[in-house]
Image 1: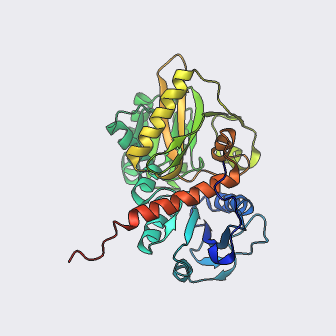
Image 2: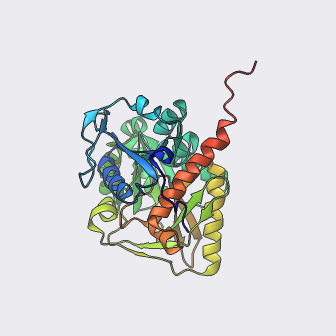
Image 3: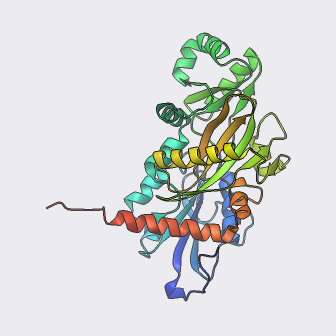
Length: 357
């Protein structure tokens, strides 16, 4: 399906700001993703402006001829860039904290500009694993058994915490920073010594750590697209090359394989799609998200693991590949995300009452 077939004159073009980089540990991933989105965005339809955020939190104008794009260049006034054109849409290609967690979304809301992806609260809930897991528990959605611990509690009671994880979650178990993506800071601990090291590694990235039981199951991912009436893709499966689908494999090695569509019983597919749509709506997600499941065959069944609100758009990324399998090309997917941003902005703009008198 095609969303922008005709060429537009310069005066008719939508101004599209591709915003990437950022201060998080996923800075490099953001630059790689932005490179692919920029290369596949229709320059005849959009007046594209590249804006990057350096690791020092400066807004700069990068060199578009660089590949991959880099968060380097002359400093700019970001707010002024937002206010040049009332039809501006920002595509925040920001992974992880200070970009995908509601902070950038809040800034864009303040300056009253349309942007792709979920809003402030949904972004924050999906990013914070402790809050997301609490949300799933509240709604009775099956997930892995889990515990969360603050760094201060761990420092004062590490022996008790380690013992509780081993007793309640068993070994091996996974240890993750609460607010991080792309498997950064994630470890699979198979012994008490590895568990202690895993806590230390995770606390490098966040003050709260999640510990999860290991589920011996298949890794299934579904792409969700839309605002109030979202669509869900055919599921795909990750066949991890290592103990789990880690950072290097996601973005650099590419040794893991993706199988699209995943070979699953039809009833399992239907259940995952139903859970994905239901949870997407309950979280208040809009635009896009990737729903990640674990499927324990001949066991407890389906577990919702997380929603990724800014999934990667690299050539080996699952999200665009899932939609491509369902007939939506990469460039059309970009068009659709921009249209969804514009639709949400128009829908919500009538609610922005500035004076009740």
